[in-house]
Image (cartoon, rainbow, N blue to C red; front, side):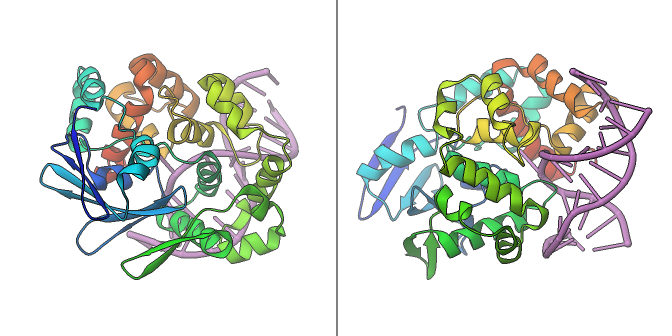
Length: 293
DNA sequence: GTCCAGGCTTTCC
DNA sequence: GGAAAGCCTGGA
């Protein structure tokens, strides 16, 4: 680790860390379980634990935790083993990316739970971020384990697959406001719960192998599978192409209307093994600034 | 085999 | 009232 960590009264503080901005991490669209507080800190839940993250000058304060959890859970979750200085340095050779990175300089790719990420991104299809967040919260509050309270709000973990697999499609549709995605959620959860689909095995597969497997699940196509590979399985070359990435790639790089499939191939060609990071800086940049709209 | 149009729930802007 | 971090189906 190239930064100093200290522990203090239910807090862990990283001193003088570059490349860590809670706003850029949580609002860049990779994660749906965060809540901004009045003091502009962010509260999130993962591994059935609640944590509050606040940036103060060049320090980041993690509250409601301790060093043991920090080392065993949050270090990996916040991708602190990666050298973002080197990643950004490499990608900044591209002048367009340099702008996008400058805009979202404190972004990091989280390592999230595979099943929660899978269901969250099935919900994301033809959907809006505020609605996706609401559906994920409704599911957790109804089926998840109580994980803690922060600033007066109770937090519940995302349930295990057997919970959603055991429900009727109509219940899922109406209770969680997921519309036509309800049966995809139920059937995908059932396959995992019944052991027909081994989600953990994807950790040990390549991006292409993982993509072929994930797209056999209902509700998982090219874009959603790349999101899962990038946000849960640490496949750095995964390049999810959504409407914003399509717009920003057409606007800056390709200069003409291009099919989604072709944009995916261009991402691999232009950005190579770091395509996932490039995608995330570009997505955040394009969406916040409305580029190409 | 590949490509593409149309349909899909609900709500946010 | 259009659009939304897309996927699935059917037909060319």
